[in-house]
Length: 231
Image 1 (cartoon, one colour):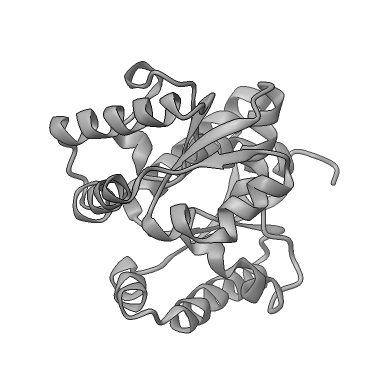
Image 2 (cartoon, helix red, strand yellow):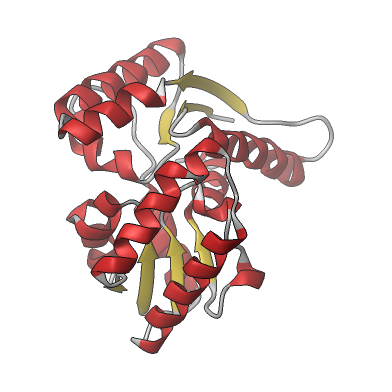
């Protein structure tokens, strides 16, 4: 079994879910008392959020590169970054380490394609929805990506940072997300990516008119598969 290097804390609410899935999935696959071998570096999300608000992505690259290098030095065989937005920095981090980063978009695209879907809605932070670091990776996998209208982009982003990252689950926000998902269905989306690791706290399969692809669940399950593979 490979040792998973987990960079968490972005936010810690979703890192709990990662930890739970990693261990429960390993136990299910191997049985008995088995669980995952995990090294975790939990960053202080306040520092990263402050950098994001100032456009200081280089500062965040330094923080996450330090985390990845620490995990590599500690014996991790590969890195899992437990958030979508910080995958923006994967190219910078990869240059500083010699172990692979398991990319959240690749795992998600593979799951969607196994379901024979080609047109997919994407929810996440404003960075994730509007920039190319996730969308371009999905497009390279052959997926057409739909994002919400501008006013809805603002709603999705605000709920993530001002509610979900603080552990606040509000029914009115769930209804707004449901409305936004329905609008993407009207545009032809065949499914929806929960492209922020906190959104699964608010929206599940039963809440959506479209099939849901929760990146937290998919990424963690793929990490277990990789950890138990011969690759």
